[in-house]
Length: 91
Length: 138
Image (tube, rainbow over the protein chains, first blue to last red):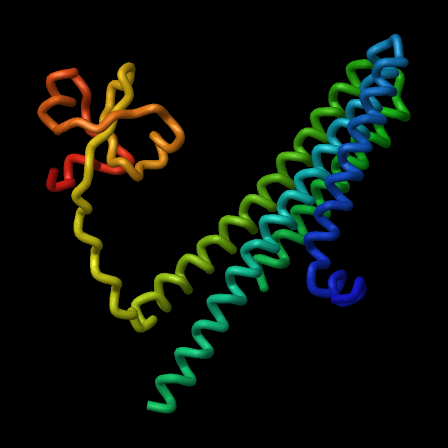
């Protein structure tokens, strides 16, 4: 399987990993920003952008990953349904 | 289709609220104002999380319903006959509290000696829960 086929078939898992990595990076940047800031008024923007933003991206990534698993299961069930339909029509 | 619309809408609203919260907290220097907008950001995370959770639960339910619909239609192959309990020596080590079949993986490579069921019982040993020597006809 070449790279493009893999990306086309597994786009949601690839997107999930990208989003999870971006979310982790955002959390790290937020933490570094909060560590360097002295005043709470300077820290809060980092908490919102890095903290909440990172949590959102990780959440979307996890949802995409689980959704991909469900999609695979759904496809397998449809394949079973298709075969069952073919068998019953040939009987 | 409505589920897809719901996940897109909640994700968009959630991200928009977080972005708005970041924009406003960065623009303000008053702590009270910032806390207010931080709360908006938290609300955004909750909206986004609830939307995602709803999407996953709907997907899980849909696959579960399809599975329940299909499984009774799948022809069942003849099941392999259940293997009769094997007779054989029952083994245990001197410090063991359970006795096993000789081929039990829990005694593989251990120094054990064979004895009768009564001897193991007298030593206060109980049958192993993995190899079930209580079923053995020894």
